[in-house]
Image 1 (spheres, rainbow, N blue to C red):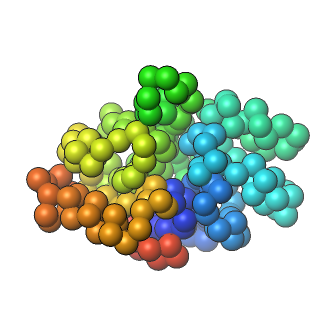
Image 2 (spheres, rainbow, N blue to C red; image 1 turned 180 degrees about the vertical axis):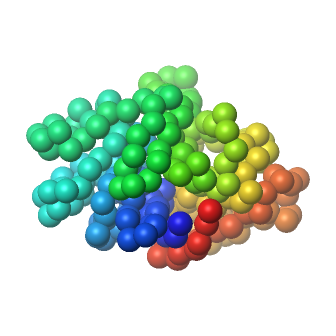
Image 3 (cartoon, one colour; image 1 turned 90 degrees about the vertical axis):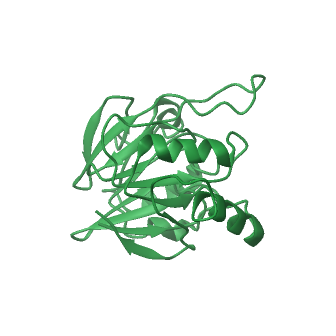
Amino acid sequence: MRLTKFGHACVRVEKDGRRLVVDPGGLTDPRALDGADAVLVTHEHADHFSEETLRAAAERDPALRIWTNTSVAGRLDGLSGRVTAVGEGEAFTAAGFDVRVYGTWHAVIHPDIPRVGNIGFLVDDALFHPGDALTVPDTAVDTLLLPVHGPWSTTGQLVDYVRAVAPQRSYAIHDGALNDIGTAMVGGLLGDNGPGTGAPYHHLTAGTSVEIG
């Protein structure tokens, strides 16, 4: 599979001419959806889900399909059955990729802030995108997309999370609010200058692609 990082939490996965896009939110260039066959959305927050962008993409391509949780699906009414709501434990095929769903809730930001639903997606038993949660799948993960910066986690929690998932490698996502200094600081703690996660850590700039799986 070919993995391309887009803005913030959005990635595109390509294989044999098929394109699957995850979390094209408001901090992502809408061109991330160009040529997409299917879209996965983890939850309703604006940095992961842009209703305007998805509706525009669906209008351009009547074959585009979307899988997400019930909350996001409810906001995409009128797309003629092209949106499928899924939840933890379910499995489906999107653009020829095998996808399994893990998790239920967004990580706690503060007890006074209501939680929203959040699901993670394991693609082809190789690539895991957890959304905004530190969900540990009950299976081996080759490549973990690691949300490295948000108001709901610390870098110490991320170290323990990578250790718990035990992937072969991790790539940073959810980094749209970090400047260069913050990116270097987090990367050092999750990489060679930290306590050790057991998996090589990589940071990709927007538009960069790598082969995985």
